[in-house]
Image (cartoon, rainbow, N blue to C red; front, side, top):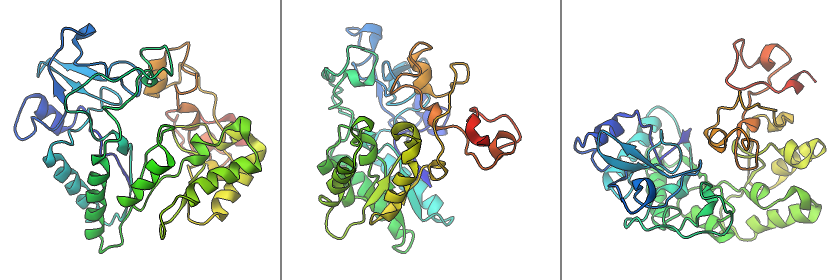
Amino acid sequence: MDFVPNHSSNEHEWFLKSEQKVEPYTDYYIWKDRNESNPGGYPNNWLSVFRGPAWEWSETRQQFYYHAFTKEQPDLNYWNPVIIQEMKDVLKFWTDRGVDGFRMDAVPFLFEDQEFKDEPLSGKTDDPEDYNYLSHIYTWNFPQVIDVLAEFTESVRENTNGEGFVMVEALSEDLTTEDMMTFYNCSDFAFNFNMIVKLKPEELSGESIQDVVADWLDNMPEGKTANWVLGNHDNWRVGSRFGDGNMDGFNMIALLLPGVSVTYNGEEIGMTNTEVSWEQTVDPAGLNCGQEHFQDVGCSRDPERTPMQWDSTTNAGFSNSMPWLPVNENYLE
């Protein structure tokens, strides 16, 4: 099951009660007063992954709340130990119903600096709205992340007679191999995104593939299990990154290497990116980039998220109704 511990919906009961300062929910989220020395009164310069300030004003509470992603996804306050217990209770709710495996999403985002210091410029871009404009030393991958994930994993195993399985998702070019290996201390493994973040299409060769494979295997702690991820919902599909002719080869590599093969739906049948117009775009990341830039690298992720192509019937057999994104026209081929 996909488990998203970083945030809730802004329509969730916890958030609505926190907004009204109803105990014990007052500090379930990250709230901060206005800072009139900053443009817009924002508490600091922190940015959202989906562009622009990571703060949203609440008229009800008369404070800003922090959201690493969209304003509809307020971040939970993991400095509050009650939140950790609440999330353990969520895990137990599902293990009691027979779930024995979890993918834990976006785990580096769980903690933020308690002094709310401004983050320094990264030098990566001149666009002040772009998430990469800042170096995220105060909002990302705190040491406490490992401790909390270890608690979650222990809880899952206790509730499944030791048979529970936990995978964590931490996708970033800023995470070193050493960083990735630390997640073995708090889970069964972190997703191995080497073939996404380190294998560049313009440098594709047998040697470059060997290098990214060895980078994981040679640094993996003894007795642990490797895993291989070719693509996911945040990146172009394998065939669109490396070419149609390489799809089968990559699938064979992922299945033949030692460890666990992780397949993003559709990669196994060679699905490629779909052309999605501005009018059809629904991804917040793409919409926030605007009509002129929604197709830029790092903007809309809709092209790799279109419906699974099951067969050659209407809408590729996905649905008889119009799906939320267009079906790739190549489903008839």
